[in-house]
Every structure is written in C-alpha cells, then in structure tokens.
Image (cartoon, rainbow, N blue to C red):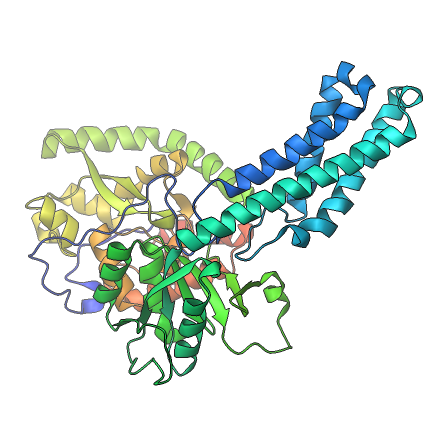
Length: 488
C-alpha cells in the first residue's frame, strides 16, 4: 500500500511559505453545481411546467373516452408513457430561443405512438367495442392541441423571464472575434445572456470604434475573475472556440470551481461539423453547446471490488489492527487513530484514517506543511508501521464506507490541492475519480518526495484508460511491493 512519507517538500522543491493561514478551497455541498456541469436552463420551474402541461393534456384527452373512467391504472400508465416518450425525444431540453412550433413534429409523433399503445391496451381489456373510433381520434387530437398550447404558454413565459432576468455571464476568449460576439449578445437580449466582462489575460481594445454597444470590462487575472463572478452572480461562462486551449484551462478550472456552467461558442462555424456537436443550440445565431467537464462514470464492478476486498481484508487484518492499537495506546498514549481532512471525488472533503505515528505541533502544521515530522522523532514501532504501510490499513474502512476506492489517485489535504491545482495543469482533473489507497503512480515509484507533475500525469492516464482488470493488476502489483517495502 502507498504511504505519504514525511519529507521536506514534493520532489525536493521549496514548498513556499507555509507559516501563514492555510488556503481553504470551496467545499462541495449537496445540490450545488459541480465542475463544468452545464444545463443551460434559466431560473424557474420551466421543465416542471412542461411536464405538468403534457401530463394534464394527456389526462384531459382521455376524458372523451368514458369507459376509461373505470380504469384509473390504465389512464395513469398512459400519462406516464407520454412523459417517458416526450422525455426520450428531448422535449424537456430547453433552448434559449424556443417556440411552440419547434416542438410540433415531436409532440405529434410521440402522442400518436402513445395513443396507439393505449388503443392496443383497450383491445386487450376488451374495451374497444365500447369506444368509437371517432372518440379515439378526438382524444388524440385534443391531447396534441392542449399539449402544444400549453407548451407555447410555457415557452413564452420563459422567453419573457429570460429577457427580464438575464443570466449573468463572462466571455472567455481573445482576438477580434470577441468584440463581434460580445456585440451580438448585447444586441439580442432575448438570448437571456447579460455579459458582465471579458476574460482574457492579453485582451486590449476589444471594442470596435463603430460599435454602439457598451464597453465591457476586461478581466486579466484569476482574482479579477473571481471577484466578477461573486459580485455579479455569474452562473455561466461562454468560451470562444475550443475549450481545450491550454491557455484557457486555468480560467475554466477557476470558473467551474465557482459553480459556473461552461458553454462553448463557435464564432466562425464551418459546414463540416464533428458529430459530437449535433446537440449544439443557437445563441444569437451562433452555434453554442454546453460542456460537461471531465468525469468518471463509476462502473458497478469497481464499487463491488472495493466493498468485497476491503471487507475481506478488514476481517483478516483485524488481529493486526487490534494489536497495533493496543501497542500504540500503551507506548504513545491516547489518540491512537489519526484523522485528517482530505479531498476526494468531485472535490468533496472526507476524513482519512491512519494509525498515529507522529504528532504535529498544531492543527495548522498538520494542514499546511508538507513535512510535519522527521523519522528520528518516531519510536521504532512507529517507523515500522510507516515503512511497512501498516499505518494505512485503517483506510480500508474509508474504502468500505465509500469515501475512497482501493485504486485511484492519492488524496491530498485541501491546502495542497489548491497549491498543486494552480501550479500543475491537470491536477484538479484527478478528482473526477474516487481517490485510492494505491494507484498507477504509486506502483511506478511515485511516492513520497517525487514529482507532483509526474504523479498527476500518471493519475490522469490511469483514469483515461480505466478498466476493472487494470484495478486488479495494480492491486496485485501493490501486494508484491509489500514484500520489499520502501515507503511512499
């Protein structure tokens, strides 16, 4: 198992002045937006109103069929079928400039399919002889008409809300296209976008001389950007061109951590469009699509492996854990278990457990200093625990609880997550997967006082090429390393 050895600093590089107040990262809370997750919806229950409208229209359409009044379960199933068909057809994905007629083909086709299923169900229940064919056609027509009228009302209400309460947004980009896009968005308030600034570390003179629209402030530092987001309630960032440009990564990471949805806008669209962009939506005539940030879809096999192996190892290692706890209590005094806040998947903090092998001077030293003790200050038993990684065995309980995984990027303290995220591109992307006891970086010798950049690269490579067999292979190689312990 891997272990965080007490060293001077990562890869023997100066760790900076750690004597001041620790940096605190923004913590995740349930319901808060996460990294780069964009839905493009305005405030308000628009989706709920559309669902209510479609469900109500389907229910009213069945009222013309008197025999169905005695079969409420059949009517309820029909309404649920309508909502499922409409949802699968994308009728609850809201665009900025949407009208009733845009939904007409999809509504008519899916409503007709639902009524065909209802007709077949009536035939099975021997109800068709009591329902005239004209009544079925009338019910379907009433359903479609009411659904379209209701949707027209919801879309109009939404367009009015967008114009009255536009979403504050930042424009991220550089070059002459910035002024053109900014002017277009300012001239079309119906898009529901209110630009409050342009993010560009080299932006100069974005406004054209003949442009009558108001000039926008240019934000050239990360601190300016954060202040603009907080002061203006920014909820969206629009990136010109490809969001994968290296110079934009630090901006996007900062915006995503502040809860902003990330959109990608193509200022100069080409007729040759990648298949991925078929879901693009028009925004003031530009092709725009919400971006979903790097994430790791958890495979059920990974969690099954974690629970099975961690439970088995906890049972097998329980005598060792009990003996170590007793020895530490007798020789070192109270406080056998060391608890420390670490950052896990999606930036969520959790409490990591270890056997206590050293005692930092205070909480600040424990949270903000890479080197909190030296091995010569430990007893021989504590040195044995660290060199054999036995002090890490308590993290099997973190794995069993779901805080961590057996295999994944090693978790770090909040102070260093902030520092390493600013210094090493791609470091924050490690948090798209659950953190682990061991990982690809650890079995390749990246333990203790080694390069954070190399660890980051190996961790992201592991996530990009993840497979269940790779986890098993890393666990077997980690077990082999235990016979020649070097610490980590």
